[in-house]
Length: 208
Image (cartoon, rainbow, N blue to C red):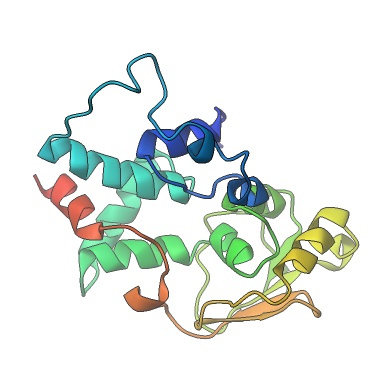
């Protein structure tokens, strides 16, 4: 399965803001954006003049990198979103939010989406009692996501759960950290998806 294996802090610097790709590190002074808030490369500190195309491209790249999706898969998500009824940009965000690896991250079982992806691929989670090791698996309303019995004593999972105690979860999710399970209560609305993306720029990028 293809995935980005380079330095992720470089991606945050390229987009000029925190994408929270490294979990707890993003909240410390070690965060790359805190130390070097300019794009990587020898011309990173030079004068940046962004074209209209560049603005659209950067927004698309930012969303793609937040969810850890490569270009071909992202384009398939966009094509699906454009065929659905409703607003294409919101449909796209909704499809990405309902990925299993994102749900695992949102419920506090992983410190980042990249870590959630790895945990899912290693078979530590079940959907409706069925082992599911596909990070892009699309969950639906009513689905129950649980940490599998053999994985409940994992130090990493327990540390993530302890760190997530007291956290406010999205309204469309019900996370029971003590029982190590969660349920999808509803399809998220745009207001419930706390992600700083101007999705209309992505639609314009693919519509040009």
